[in-house]
Image 1: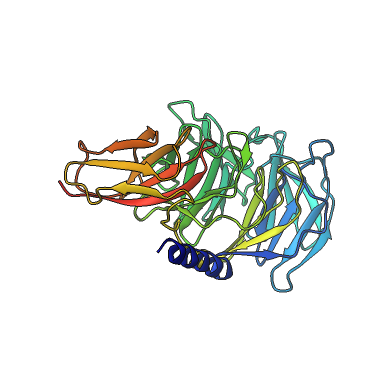
Image 2: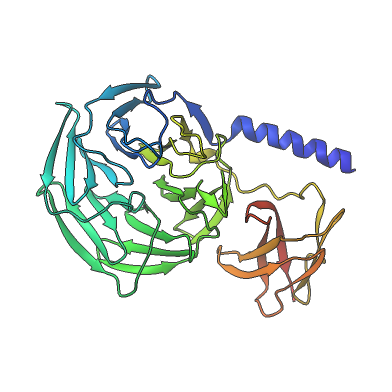
Length: 376
């Protein structure tokens, strides 16, 4: 039975690799780098700037998905790294050092269009566009950029210090995520209001984020001292997160992402080696984390539980330095437990329903998952 299970799992993994959402595309012509900016204009994507930990790069490259090819464009007027970039209409914008730079593809030129912009360095992932306007969030304000006037205005002042890391747009609303505290806030530009949402079930620093097809995605980055490939999906309709297919390229941090139509792309990043590769993401092919045992056989019983207590056991060894996170059906984190060889997850104070248990190793990598059913 064990051999049959292993063979079936291996087959599922192979099939998942063939039919998954990630596809490697042509690598960017420039050298590998991290902390690059990116944006899309019409049917083309752009990646530029960044550095390799020693040298700043001034080149920019245009990606054409129709031909899966890259072309070098005008060099940058200044170094741009860890800077927010976004495309609106037929122009691209990058905010660096208090200036807003505009790129015009028709003339292949850069111009400064605003000399009094948000000081946006290190907020490269804290940006998005909604209804033809650009937004940046720092630790105090949410700023709005109008390309008709090239002006920035403050549209929201935070009543608490927010040290956000990531942002994305979905269904004409913006989402800001603090991966250290797992906070997630929804910003409605129509009412200029924010609402707290379900927390991100991950602590990936130096991660990457984007929104596509009405959902948000957060992934890659560093957990502990390790670079990872994990990705998480946020569904605004259910206010829930779930782990999804890992990116199939190398683990990395400080990558950049852009979207063209209904397709997203992740480029560059570093894991000690600077990358210039490009990965296409099709979220119509996304699946959740496959519920599976880890190699040492991870058991949870009884399941369903009638008293709220689930016993967790790992055959063939202890669970030293391992932990478990439990999420409710809405994706909200309800419990965190350090595990021993035989441990108990106590949900007796929780309401009946379905829960999701994720087993984490010493570096907080998700290594297995189980559906829990509580029927008191």
